[in-house]
Length: 185
Image 1 (tube, rainbow, N blue to C red):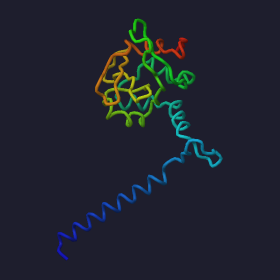
Image 2 (cartoon, one colour; image 1 turned 120 degrees about the horizontal axis):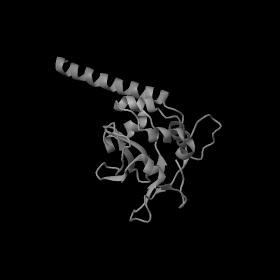
Image 3 (cartoon, rainbow, N blue to C red; image 1 turned 45 degrees about the vertical axis):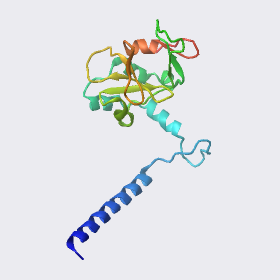
């Protein structure tokens, strides 16, 4: 057998073996997630439960370390407010907004490194997404500044359209309404 062919076969075998090992590790280490509607008696948790655990156990310090900047005070307060974090399908209607329907905030997002990894390619590495609408569009703040308060931006799922939604996180939270009733942050 020619040395070049032998080297190629060894390379292919090594890559294949590496893939098999990675898949085995991933399968062994992945949390058990029950399919929707499945019985919970086997100890598995639903994807929604995993999401809520991440949401309610923020890792603000790790996010600060990731960006190398302090977390905005209003966002820090938001992640301490478990009642508000659990709310879903809110509507953001700032004063003077022309659209009577406003922007839907389907849920808040966890403040952890996994959320950043999920979003960085869509919205850019300098933005922190803290909420999203039903289409995956994000409400985020720029983390490449120490300014506080920081404006809230609405970024579409492709990262294309960027629009200022509120002058500050406080103004954004004050503009949230469930079913037309104002809530306080």
